[in-house]
Amino acid sequence: MLKPILLMSLLIALFSLPAVAAAQLTELEIHWLQAGKPVIDYARTQGLPIDIIVQPQDAPGAVPLALGYAAGRCKLVLSLRGNAQAEGVLQDVRPARHALMIEAMTAHEIGHCRRYAQGDWHVLPRGFVEPSSLQPGKLTPLAQELRETRREEGYADLVALAWMHGRHPGQYREVLAWMRGVRAAGGSHATQGWLALADGAGVFDESASPFVQAQVLWRKGLSGDK
Image (cartoon, rainbow, N blue to C red; front, side):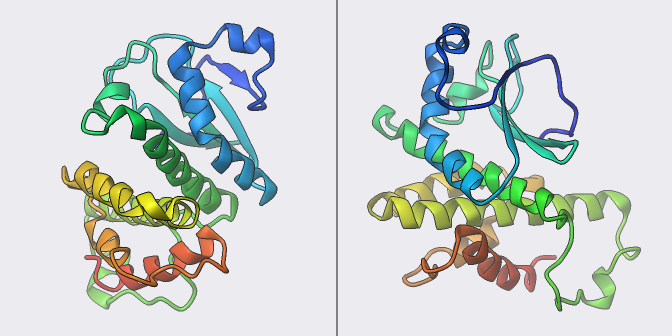
């Protein structure tokens, strides 16, 4: 996740990549954009306000694909130039599967966009009540921030998995295993509890949107999230 601050960047409003814009993009950037295109197209049909930003300068150490929110719009930011993390995040993935995992990452960020756009960021589902010992004010500010971040990451992971389950059912287990590996580092992105809920038959109801499907499992996972 990025803070909702826009750095100097190249704004690409559409994925059609007009000749002038495409000429300024690297082959790797075009590959990532094309891999995420189905997710972005779907999100826009759902009314999500999304801008695509490609950082034109080197961004060593940046998250390769991240989301910010400003002026009522989601900013999907691609930072690949001079960034070893762009290769590192896919180092254990066969090249033939890179596009699949990039699509999953894009769906994850769209999960964040949905939460922002709906005004639900750091808001618990209606009717969900925290144990009194865990309610705001009972945790240190740092512990509260870490837990809220982890919960948002859990929701976004479930959106990605619901998307991939519906669009790529034959590769779903592979995507889930990869996500578990990425999350093994723990910290504020330790979403293993939610990933475990997504490991089973019939966990997603594909008659609903990926956002609704994710919400069902996310709520279940909140009950065990400390």
